[in-house]
Image: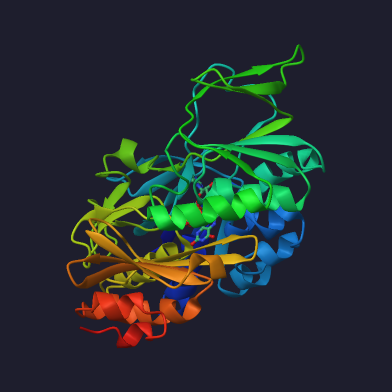
Length: 407
Ligand SMILES: Cc1cc2nc3c(=O)[nH]c(=O)nc-3n(C[C@H](O)[C@H](O)[C@H](O)COP(=O)(O)OP(=O)(O)OC[C@H]3O[C@@H](n4cnc5c(N)ncnc54)[C@H](O)[C@@H]3O)c2cc1C
């Protein structure tokens, strides 16, 4: 009989790994451990259509229950892996069960970064990562309710767009001087800030969260910033980033470096353990540094690599990453990473709501933000991959197709 494989964490990574393992011919015992009492599901709709109530729960599922049945997967859902013994090759669950493995895949994802200011534990302050979070949040999303969103990153702004659609009064507090400042250029930030203002979202940049205060029942009633401003609220959503979930791997002695450190085959520092998805950091072949990504595409690609590597296939993860964000009718597709870019080129007029922003180092394209512009997105992937030298003049001319902007 083939040796058992155990997967810890039942998200996008796990679902893809299961499919790959079986497709590649692994016929042995396969157990999936997940602390949420849910089959693996897609998280992106949680800040978009599912939050708005426009999306049935079943449509979130990455695979229906019958898939796990027909693929011979033993499910241990609603169960947390609490311990890992590398020498004994065994995982302990929170119900005391011990699962032996020959090979282990860690796919524990990421968890919201929490704020620790006074009043942080008042009722009505929410985080958004799971369907359970949405279930807690939804009853409060009623027309006219006043919400303050802490953080103007993707999740904060997607939630802002959804809440406006639902008729809430929306304020967003951001400590940086512009929205999405960690991921996009100032020109793209300005476009998004204007789009949200147009929809009636009030964005307050350069504001550091100081505290929350509440009423006698322990419910949040106000948000305070360090410069003395106050916003009365009915609810708060905090979206200030996520941290990799490295336990129980780290406690067991597996090396970490801003996440579980893996090589290009998604192998950890232990020869019997692989890891993939939001919980890992990996050296990027294209960008020459160790990075941790939080995206569906990354989880999907790393899961495939990890599963194939677990079966002894000669594979390397070397894909150009991509990411999307939906806010109102604006689809942002980001291909590549703009790390260390030295200049940017705007293609098209943001006023048309369809444009791109190209990030370059010298004449080499590193990344492109495509706003309602999927044509550039397709060409960008190829140009980044092939490290083609580009002409800034041709790049800046939106009538020249991106693929023809070669120097
Ligand atoms: C609201 C929201 C919107 C998003 N929107 C987008 C988007 O538009 N585009 C995009 O590309 N990406 C988006 N993402 C990111 C994307 O969803 C993640 O990158 C992806 O889910 C990562 O998959 P994963 O399997 O690595 O981790 P996860 O999906 O986090 O799954 C990990 C699972 O492991 C479980 N777990 C953790 N520790 C243990 C343990 N000890 N024992 C058992 N189980 C454990 C967790 O509970 C979780 O269920 C979004 C994320 C969120 C939260």
